[in-house]
Image (tube, rainbow, N blue to C red; front, side, top):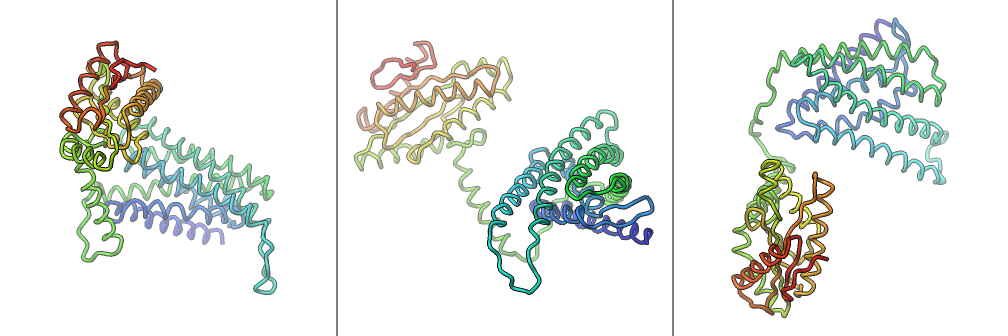
Length: 422
């Protein structure tokens, strides 16, 4: 019986690995979300099996949920990190964390229902649901810690083991799964009074599972040394393909009008739309304020910290402008370190107040993001009070911008022509 159980566990690991690796291998054609969803839906089964489903092996008693499924999931997360990046791998990690918290919250509400029997003798076992919920939360917290730990350890081992991927996987899995076995057994013992033999048996099984999965990885790398093939065109389109192509087309149209670095409107978009926006507001009797923003001492940022730091400053300033953008505001990168905000339905006085809020927020945000705060100087002109032509308004705003710089920078100058540093 024990030998049969061992063979069945190897078969389960092979099936799990084959399906998950196929989904990961085909991520360029079917999308990474398929792999992530498959990874996530297994969590409840893992916890359920770890709570009640045990089998006898020659070395002790183990649960397939903990040995095969959880160990496989952790190593799949590590492989996802190796194939993609940290920004991608954090998605399933955070999704599992919040998703299981959601389950527990819903169960806390569901238990307050007054249920009725539809089938004689079948009643919900709320106590078991509570037990599973506690183990799921604890298991998810452990998975979160395990995932971070295995990635950090994988990176650290890279300094010594370099491209020996399977060996790094083996060491990472052995260390982190040992920690996990101790942590999960503690909860399992408190919740269901699991005997000590489960701790030892589960640990040995996880070490063997790590060895098996590392062997599978070696086979995979031998068969597919480079899996970054471009997707082959499909012979038919399903609904998801149609939606994808449509969304990409719409995104392409939208991005064609955006500055690639800051993701706001670019100079050409400003030149072609600004006058129309001013005229449209004026025809309805509304003011439009042109707010010209220039980053102070931007050349010094590039010279001191490099152009990459300068790009980060530009992107941060643009993000502040977008975060404060109203439905009647239009944000553009005019060129270099200059931005323009065209605010319809905003008079000159309101525009100066709005500009000062932008100026202060840019200073506050960059103070937290960089070694020192970044400041801006701002000039404001308003139509139709000061003219209706774009050229006239821009020239006035540009003059006032230089007045703000001459007065010491980090200021706003508007119709009052008095530098304001609120």
